Amino acid sequence: MAISDIKEYAHLTEADIEALGQELDAIRRDVEDSRGERDAKYIQRTIAFQRSLMVAGRLVLFASRKKPAWLLGSALLGVGKIIENMELGHNVIHGQWDWMNDPEIHSTNWEWDNTCPSSGWKHSHNFTHHKFTNIVGLDNDVGYGILRITRDQKWEPKYLAQPLFNALLATFFEWGVALHHLETDKLRTGEVKWSDKKEMAIDVVRKVGSQVGKDYILFPLLTGPAWKSTLTANATANIIRNYWTYAVIFCGHFPDGAEKFTVEEYEAETQPEWYLRQMLGSANFGAGKTLAFMTGNLCYQIEHHLFPDLPSNRYAEIAVKIQQLCDKYDLPYTTGSLPHQYGQTLRTIMKLSLPNRFLSATSDDAPETSSELKFRIRGGMKEVFGTDPATGKRRGLRTALAMAGKHTAVHGS
Image (cartoon, rainbow, N blue to C red):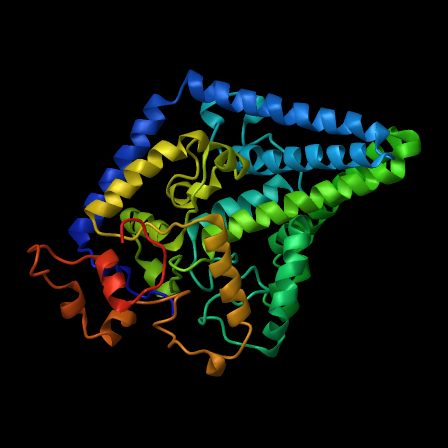
Protein backbone atom coordinates (compact mmCIF):
# COMPACT_ATOMS: atom_id res chain seq x y z
CA MET A 1 0.00 0.00 0.00
CA ALA A 2 1.02 3.66 -0.18
CA ILE A 3 3.57 5.12 2.20
CA SER A 4 1.92 6.95 5.10
CA ASP A 5 5.12 7.86 6.99
CA ILE A 6 7.95 8.82 4.67
CA LYS A 7 10.45 9.35 7.51
CA GLU A 8 9.87 5.86 8.83
CA TYR A 9 9.98 4.37 5.34
CA ALA A 10 13.14 6.22 4.31
CA HIS A 11 14.93 5.62 7.64
CA LEU A 12 15.99 9.28 7.79
CA THR A 13 15.69 11.54 10.80
CA GLU A 14 14.34 15.08 10.51
CA ALA A 15 17.93 16.35 10.62
CA ASP A 16 18.89 13.95 7.79
CA ILE A 17 16.01 15.13 5.62
CA GLU A 18 16.81 18.78 6.31
CA ALA A 19 20.46 18.19 5.36
CA LEU A 20 19.40 16.36 2.18
CA GLY A 21 17.16 19.29 1.27
CA GLN A 22 20.01 21.75 1.73
CA GLU A 23 22.27 19.70 -0.54
CA LEU A 24 19.55 19.56 -3.22
CA ASP A 25 19.02 23.31 -2.92
CA ALA A 26 22.76 23.75 -3.49
CA ILE A 27 22.57 21.64 -6.68
CA ARG A 28 19.75 23.88 -7.92
CA ARG A 29 21.72 27.06 -7.21
CA ASP A 30 24.80 25.71 -8.97
CA VAL A 31 22.83 25.01 -12.15
CA GLU A 32 20.94 28.31 -12.02
CA ASP A 33 24.19 30.23 -11.56
CA SER A 34 25.91 28.42 -14.44
CA ARG A 35 23.14 28.69 -17.06
CA GLY A 36 24.40 30.54 -20.07
CA GLU A 37 25.49 30.50 -23.69
CA ARG A 38 25.98 26.74 -24.07
CA ASP A 39 22.45 26.10 -22.80
CA ALA A 40 21.00 28.76 -25.10
CA LYS A 41 22.80 27.26 -28.08
CA TYR A 42 21.50 23.82 -27.15
CA ILE A 43 17.83 24.82 -27.22
CA GLN A 44 18.27 26.96 -30.34
CA ARG A 45 19.93 24.08 -32.19
CA THR A 46 17.20 21.73 -31.01
CA ILE A 47 14.48 24.03 -32.36
CA ALA A 48 16.27 24.39 -35.70
CA PHE A 49 16.80 20.62 -35.99
CA GLN A 50 13.18 19.82 -35.12
CA ARG A 51 11.80 22.33 -37.62
CA SER A 52 14.13 21.01 -40.33
CA LEU A 53 12.77 17.52 -39.76
CA MET A 54 9.19 18.76 -40.08
CA VAL A 55 9.90 20.75 -43.25
CA ALA A 56 11.76 17.81 -44.80
CA GLY A 57 8.90 15.47 -43.91
CA ARG A 58 6.30 17.77 -45.43
CA LEU A 59 8.31 18.12 -48.66
CA VAL A 60 8.85 14.37 -49.00
CA LEU A 61 5.12 13.77 -48.64
CA PHE A 62 4.47 15.55 -51.94
CA ALA A 63 5.70 12.26 -53.43
CA SER A 64 3.98 10.10 -50.79
CA ARG A 65 1.94 8.08 -53.31
CA LYS A 66 5.17 6.14 -53.68
CA LYS A 67 5.76 3.88 -50.69
CA PRO A 68 9.43 4.82 -50.00
CA ALA A 69 8.47 8.51 -49.83
CA TRP A 70 5.49 7.70 -47.59
CA LEU A 71 7.70 5.72 -45.20
CA LEU A 72 10.40 8.40 -45.12
CA GLY A 73 7.89 11.22 -44.68
CA SER A 74 6.06 9.41 -41.89
CA ALA A 75 9.35 8.69 -40.09
CA LEU A 76 10.61 12.28 -40.39
CA LEU A 77 7.33 13.67 -39.08
CA GLY A 78 7.17 11.07 -36.30
CA VAL A 79 10.65 11.93 -35.05
CA GLY A 80 9.96 15.64 -35.41
CA LYS A 81 6.75 15.37 -33.39
CA ILE A 82 8.52 13.36 -30.67
CA ILE A 83 11.21 16.03 -30.29
CA GLU A 84 8.62 18.82 -30.33
CA ASN A 85 6.49 17.19 -27.64
CA MET A 86 9.26 15.95 -25.37
CA GLU A 87 12.44 18.02 -25.62
CA LEU A 88 10.65 21.22 -26.64
CA GLY A 89 6.97 21.41 -25.68
CA HIS A 90 7.05 19.58 -22.36
CA ASN A 91 10.23 21.27 -21.18
CA VAL A 92 9.51 24.77 -22.50
CA ILE A 93 6.05 24.75 -20.87
CA HIS A 94 7.75 23.82 -17.58
CA GLY A 95 9.59 27.14 -17.80
CA GLN A 96 13.02 25.56 -18.26
CA TRP A 97 14.05 28.30 -20.70
CA ASP A 98 12.23 31.30 -19.21
CA TRP A 99 15.55 32.59 -17.83
CA MET A 100 16.56 33.49 -21.41
CA ASN A 101 13.72 36.04 -21.66
CA ASP A 102 13.15 34.94 -25.26
CA PRO A 103 9.43 35.31 -26.04
CA GLU A 104 9.59 32.53 -28.65
CA ILE A 105 10.60 29.87 -26.11
CA HIS A 106 8.92 31.25 -23.01
CA SER A 107 6.44 29.09 -21.09
CA THR A 108 3.75 31.78 -21.37
CA ASN A 109 3.82 31.74 -25.18
CA TRP A 110 4.63 28.21 -26.34
CA GLU A 111 1.75 26.21 -27.82
CA TRP A 112 2.76 22.65 -28.53
CA ASP A 113 1.77 20.09 -31.17
CA ASN A 114 -0.77 18.23 -29.03
CA THR A 115 -4.54 18.07 -28.64
CA CYS A 116 -4.26 19.22 -25.02
CA PRO A 117 -3.80 23.02 -24.87
CA SER A 118 -0.60 24.09 -23.15
CA SER A 119 -2.62 26.11 -20.63
CA GLY A 120 -4.38 22.92 -19.56
CA TRP A 121 -1.13 20.97 -19.39
CA LYS A 122 0.33 23.60 -17.08
CA HIS A 123 -2.45 22.89 -14.59
CA SER A 124 -2.94 19.12 -14.89
CA HIS A 125 0.78 18.33 -15.23
CA ASN A 126 3.00 21.16 -14.03
CA PHE A 127 0.88 21.90 -10.97
CA THR A 128 -1.25 18.88 -10.04
CA HIS A 129 1.16 16.08 -10.96
CA HIS A 130 4.42 17.69 -9.91
CA LYS A 131 3.06 19.11 -6.66
CA PHE A 132 1.18 15.95 -5.62
CA THR A 133 3.43 13.34 -7.26
CA ASN A 134 2.10 9.81 -6.64
CA ILE A 135 -0.21 10.86 -3.78
CA VAL A 136 -3.19 8.55 -4.14
CA GLY A 137 -6.32 10.69 -4.30
CA LEU A 138 -4.52 13.93 -5.26
CA ASP A 139 -2.31 13.04 -8.24
CA ASN A 140 -4.61 12.26 -11.17
CA ASP A 141 -1.69 10.65 -12.99
CA VAL A 142 -1.89 7.65 -10.65
CA GLY A 143 -3.61 5.42 -13.18
CA TYR A 144 -4.87 8.33 -15.31
CA GLY A 145 -8.42 7.60 -14.16
CA ILE A 146 -8.63 4.33 -16.12
CA LEU A 147 -5.79 2.09 -14.88
CA ARG A 148 -5.23 0.44 -11.50
CA ILE A 149 -1.51 0.62 -10.77
CA THR A 150 -1.52 0.30 -6.96
CA ARG A 151 -3.58 -1.78 -4.56
CA ASP A 152 -4.60 1.47 -2.88
CA GLN A 153 -7.08 1.73 -5.76
CA LYS A 154 -10.07 -0.45 -4.96
CA TRP A 155 -10.57 -3.19 -7.53
CA GLU A 156 -13.69 -2.93 -9.71
CA PRO A 157 -14.89 -5.22 -12.51
CA LYS A 158 -14.00 -2.56 -15.11
CA TYR A 159 -10.32 -3.21 -14.42
CA LEU A 160 -10.60 -6.62 -16.10
CA ALA A 161 -10.43 -4.64 -19.35
CA GLN A 162 -7.31 -2.82 -18.17
CA PRO A 163 -4.96 -4.47 -20.72
CA LEU A 164 -7.23 -3.19 -23.50
CA PHE A 165 -7.51 0.28 -21.94
CA ASN A 166 -3.73 0.41 -21.69
CA ALA A 167 -3.29 -0.44 -25.38
CA LEU A 168 -5.86 2.16 -26.41
CA LEU A 169 -4.25 4.79 -24.19
CA ALA A 170 -0.85 4.13 -25.77
CA THR A 171 -2.26 4.38 -29.30
CA PHE A 172 -4.26 7.56 -28.73
CA PHE A 173 -2.11 9.06 -26.00
CA GLU A 174 -2.45 12.73 -27.01
CA TRP A 175 -6.23 12.34 -26.95
CA GLY A 176 -6.01 10.68 -23.55
CA VAL A 177 -3.97 13.65 -22.30
CA ALA A 178 -6.67 16.06 -23.47
CA LEU A 179 -9.44 14.04 -21.78
CA HIS A 180 -7.29 13.63 -18.67
CA HIS A 181 -7.04 17.41 -18.40
CA LEU A 182 -10.86 17.55 -18.33
CA GLU A 183 -10.91 14.92 -15.53
CA THR A 184 -13.47 12.88 -17.46
CA ASP A 185 -13.23 10.10 -14.86
CA LYS A 186 -14.53 12.49 -12.20
CA LEU A 187 -17.17 13.79 -14.58
CA ARG A 188 -18.45 10.22 -15.02
CA THR A 189 -18.71 9.66 -11.28
CA GLY A 190 -20.27 13.04 -10.58
CA GLU A 191 -17.36 14.32 -8.47
CA VAL A 192 -17.04 17.19 -10.92
CA LYS A 193 -19.84 18.88 -12.88
CA TRP A 194 -19.68 19.72 -16.56
CA SER A 195 -20.50 23.32 -15.70
CA ASP A 196 -17.22 23.46 -13.75
CA LYS A 197 -15.28 22.35 -16.82
CA LYS A 198 -17.03 24.49 -19.44
CA GLU A 199 -14.13 26.85 -20.11
CA MET A 200 -11.60 24.01 -20.12
CA ALA A 201 -13.79 22.04 -22.54
CA ILE A 202 -14.00 25.01 -24.89
CA ASP A 203 -10.18 25.33 -24.87
CA VAL A 204 -9.78 21.60 -25.61
CA VAL A 205 -12.34 21.71 -28.46
CA ARG A 206 -10.54 24.67 -29.99
CA LYS A 207 -7.17 22.93 -29.72
CA VAL A 208 -8.52 19.66 -31.11
CA GLY A 209 -10.01 21.60 -34.02
CA SER A 210 -6.66 23.25 -34.68
CA GLN A 211 -4.76 19.94 -34.58
CA VAL A 212 -7.26 18.09 -36.77
CA GLY A 213 -7.39 20.97 -39.23
CA LYS A 214 -3.60 21.11 -39.49
CA ASP A 215 -2.80 17.37 -39.72
CA TYR A 216 -5.84 16.00 -41.49
CA ILE A 217 -7.11 18.84 -43.69
CA LEU A 218 -4.60 21.63 -44.41
CA PHE A 219 -1.36 19.67 -44.94
CA PRO A 220 -3.00 16.86 -46.95
CA LEU A 221 -4.67 19.42 -49.25
CA LEU A 222 -1.36 21.21 -49.79
CA THR A 223 0.10 18.05 -51.34
CA GLY A 224 -2.64 17.95 -53.99
CA PRO A 225 -2.98 14.52 -55.63
CA ALA A 226 -1.05 12.93 -52.76
CA TRP A 227 -3.57 14.10 -50.15
CA LYS A 228 -4.74 10.63 -49.16
CA SER A 229 -1.27 9.24 -48.54
CA THR A 230 -0.27 12.48 -46.76
CA LEU A 231 -3.26 12.13 -44.44
CA THR A 232 -2.32 8.55 -43.52
CA ALA A 233 1.31 9.58 -43.08
CA ASN A 234 0.28 12.33 -40.65
CA ALA A 235 -1.87 9.87 -38.71
CA THR A 236 1.01 7.39 -38.59
CA ALA A 237 3.42 10.08 -37.35
CA ASN A 238 1.01 10.99 -34.56
CA ILE A 239 0.69 7.35 -33.52
CA ILE A 240 4.50 6.94 -33.53
CA ARG A 241 4.73 9.98 -31.24
CA ASN A 242 1.89 8.67 -29.03
CA TYR A 243 3.48 5.26 -28.46
CA TRP A 244 6.87 6.78 -27.68
CA THR A 245 5.66 9.45 -25.25
CA TYR A 246 3.43 6.91 -23.50
CA ALA A 247 6.32 4.49 -23.03
CA VAL A 248 8.72 7.13 -21.71
CA ILE A 249 6.19 8.57 -19.26
CA PHE A 250 5.05 5.18 -17.97
CA CYS A 251 8.66 4.02 -17.48
CA GLY A 252 9.29 7.05 -15.31
CA HIS A 253 6.30 6.55 -13.02
CA PHE A 254 5.12 2.95 -12.77
CA PRO A 255 8.01 0.45 -12.56
CA ASP A 256 8.89 -1.19 -9.24
CA GLY A 257 10.46 1.31 -6.87
CA ALA A 258 8.33 4.28 -7.94
CA GLU A 259 6.39 4.41 -4.66
CA LYS A 260 2.95 5.86 -3.89
CA PHE A 261 1.97 8.01 -0.92
CA THR A 262 -1.08 8.84 1.19
CA VAL A 263 -2.78 12.20 1.58
CA GLU A 264 -1.86 12.18 5.28
CA GLU A 265 1.82 12.09 4.37
CA TYR A 266 1.44 15.24 2.28
CA GLU A 267 -0.53 17.37 4.76
CA ALA A 268 2.45 18.44 6.92
CA GLU A 269 5.13 18.09 4.24
CA THR A 270 8.16 20.40 4.20
CA GLN A 271 10.19 21.32 1.10
CA PRO A 272 12.95 18.79 1.95
CA GLU A 273 10.27 16.11 2.42
CA TRP A 274 8.82 17.08 -0.97
CA TYR A 275 12.27 16.49 -2.45
CA LEU A 276 12.42 13.07 -0.81
CA ARG A 277 8.97 12.14 -2.11
CA GLN A 278 10.07 13.00 -5.65
CA MET A 279 13.16 10.79 -5.28
CA LEU A 280 11.15 7.84 -3.98
CA GLY A 281 8.22 8.30 -6.36
CA SER A 282 10.10 8.49 -9.67
CA ALA A 283 12.19 6.10 -11.76
CA ASN A 284 14.85 6.47 -14.44
CA PHE A 285 16.01 4.28 -17.28
CA GLY A 286 19.45 4.00 -18.83
CA ALA A 287 20.08 5.98 -22.01
CA GLY A 288 22.94 7.28 -24.10
CA LYS A 289 22.97 10.82 -25.50
CA THR A 290 20.77 10.06 -28.51
CA LEU A 291 18.14 8.12 -26.57
CA ALA A 292 18.17 10.75 -23.82
CA PHE A 293 17.56 13.47 -26.40
CA MET A 294 14.66 11.53 -27.92
CA THR A 295 13.05 11.20 -24.49
CA GLY A 296 13.30 14.91 -23.78
CA ASN A 297 15.85 13.82 -21.15
CA LEU A 298 12.96 12.23 -19.25
CA CYS A 299 15.06 9.10 -18.93
CA TYR A 300 16.22 11.22 -15.96
CA GLN A 301 12.75 11.31 -14.43
CA ILE A 302 14.10 11.51 -10.86
CA GLU A 303 16.11 14.61 -11.70
CA HIS A 304 13.20 16.09 -13.62
CA HIS A 305 10.86 15.66 -10.66
CA LEU A 306 13.39 17.25 -8.34
CA PHE A 307 14.05 20.20 -10.65
CA PRO A 308 11.26 20.41 -13.29
CA ASP A 309 12.17 23.97 -14.29
CA LEU A 310 15.92 23.49 -14.79
CA PRO A 311 17.17 23.01 -18.40
CA SER A 312 16.78 19.40 -19.49
CA ASN A 313 20.23 19.29 -21.10
CA ARG A 314 21.71 19.57 -17.59
CA TYR A 315 19.94 16.52 -16.16
CA ALA A 316 22.78 14.13 -17.04
CA GLU A 317 25.28 16.08 -14.92
CA ILE A 318 22.71 16.56 -12.16
CA ALA A 319 22.11 12.79 -12.15
CA VAL A 320 25.72 12.14 -11.11
CA LYS A 321 25.24 14.34 -8.03
CA ILE A 322 21.86 12.77 -7.18
CA GLN A 323 23.38 9.29 -7.28
CA GLN A 324 26.12 10.48 -4.93
CA LEU A 325 23.46 11.78 -2.52
CA CYS A 326 21.63 8.45 -2.73
CA ASP A 327 24.86 6.69 -1.82
CA LYS A 328 25.50 9.10 1.04
CA TYR A 329 22.03 8.74 2.56
CA ASP A 330 21.64 5.07 1.56
CA LEU A 331 18.56 5.81 -0.55
CA PRO A 332 17.49 3.83 -3.62
CA TYR A 333 18.12 5.34 -7.04
CA THR A 334 15.58 3.43 -9.10
CA THR A 335 16.77 2.75 -12.62
CA GLY A 336 17.13 0.02 -15.23
CA SER A 337 17.05 -0.48 -18.96
CA LEU A 338 14.08 0.82 -20.95
CA PRO A 339 12.77 -2.71 -21.68
CA HIS A 340 13.22 -3.70 -18.01
CA GLN A 341 11.33 -0.66 -16.70
CA TYR A 342 8.51 -1.05 -19.19
CA GLY A 343 8.35 -4.80 -18.56
CA GLN A 344 7.76 -4.16 -14.85
CA THR A 345 5.17 -1.51 -15.67
CA LEU A 346 3.30 -3.80 -18.05
CA ARG A 347 3.41 -6.63 -15.51
CA THR A 348 1.81 -4.35 -12.90
CA ILE A 349 -0.91 -3.24 -15.31
CA MET A 350 -1.73 -6.83 -16.22
CA LYS A 351 -1.54 -8.14 -12.65
CA LEU A 352 -3.65 -5.43 -11.02
CA SER A 353 -6.43 -5.92 -13.51
CA LEU A 354 -7.34 -8.87 -11.25
CA PRO A 355 -8.90 -8.80 -7.76
CA ASN A 356 -6.49 -8.92 -4.81
CA ARG A 357 -7.48 -12.50 -3.97
CA PHE A 358 -5.70 -13.67 -7.12
CA LEU A 359 -2.46 -11.89 -6.16
CA SER A 360 0.26 -13.61 -4.15
CA ALA A 361 2.13 -10.76 -2.41
CA THR A 362 0.59 -8.91 0.51
CA SER A 363 -0.52 -5.31 0.07
CA ASP A 364 2.45 -3.96 2.02
CA ASP A 365 4.97 -6.33 0.43
CA ALA A 366 4.00 -5.97 -3.23
CA PRO A 367 6.85 -5.18 -5.64
CA GLU A 368 4.97 -2.40 -7.44
CA THR A 369 4.08 -0.41 -4.29
CA SER A 370 5.28 -0.96 -0.74
CA SER A 371 4.93 0.94 2.53
CA GLU A 372 6.73 1.42 5.83
CA LEU A 373 4.75 -1.58 7.12
CA LYS A 374 6.83 -3.76 4.82
CA PHE A 375 9.78 -3.62 7.19
CA ARG A 376 7.67 -4.32 10.28
CA ILE A 377 6.42 -7.45 8.55
CA ARG A 378 10.03 -8.55 7.98
CA GLY A 379 11.10 -8.54 11.62
CA GLY A 380 10.79 -4.98 12.88
CA MET A 381 12.35 -1.64 12.14
CA LYS A 382 15.12 -2.02 14.69
CA GLU A 383 16.35 -5.21 13.08
CA VAL A 384 16.17 -3.85 9.55
CA PHE A 385 17.51 -0.35 10.22
CA GLY A 386 19.86 -1.25 13.07
CA THR A 387 23.62 -0.91 13.04
CA ASP A 388 25.46 -3.20 10.66
CA PRO A 389 27.92 -5.16 12.85
CA ALA A 390 30.34 -5.49 9.93
CA THR A 391 30.68 -1.75 9.26
CA GLY A 392 29.41 -0.11 12.43
CA LYS A 393 27.16 2.10 10.29
CA ARG A 394 23.39 2.42 10.44
CA ARG A 395 21.62 0.52 7.71
CA GLY A 396 19.68 2.73 5.31
CA LEU A 397 16.68 2.28 3.06
CA ARG A 398 18.55 0.74 0.13
CA THR A 399 20.07 -1.86 2.43
CA ALA A 400 16.73 -2.46 4.10
CA LEU A 401 15.00 -2.98 0.75
CA ALA A 402 17.58 -5.60 -0.16
CA MET A 403 17.13 -7.33 3.20
CA ALA A 404 13.36 -7.24 2.85
CA GLY A 405 13.52 -8.72 -0.65
CA LYS A 406 12.34 -5.68 -2.58
CA HIS A 407 12.64 -6.65 -6.24
CA THR A 408 13.63 -3.42 -7.97
CA ALA A 409 16.59 -2.16 -9.93
CA VAL A 410 18.34 0.31 -7.69
CA HIS A 411 21.70 1.93 -8.23
CA GLY A 412 24.39 0.41 -6.08
CA SER A 413 22.32 -2.37 -4.50
